[in-house]
Length: 142
Image 1: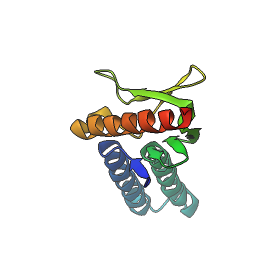
Image 2: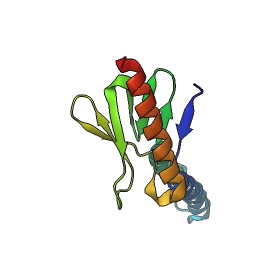
Image 3: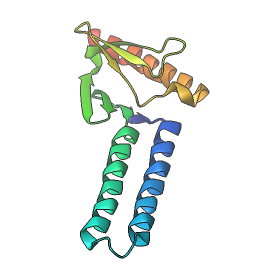
Image 4: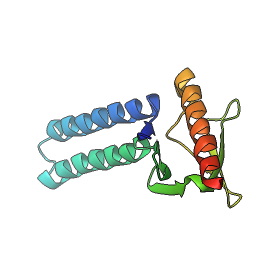
């Protein structure tokens, strides 16, 4: 099996565009401030812009990766790795923002790497992941 990776399209593009706008705006603001602003104040504005860009990057890095070993879900700052036998199913009810993985320990995990806002692309990704969970999970049972 080759590695399959799903990433949201809109939920990735929008934060990166906003990050560029915020950093460019803060640099322009720092350069355009009155002369009574100290260098440290100007640098502080740029640093704030970079911090905001970093937070937006954290939001945009979500993804779901399926490979021979199992499923890896990256949601913001947390990365979760599961063997195929630990993932029982995938569901994305109508109106849900992203799918959830049903885990063998009875818990669920949001898979924010697939976003409903991507429409048909998201539905196809959920179907692919569900098929892999069904195929791989059953392969380990026998």
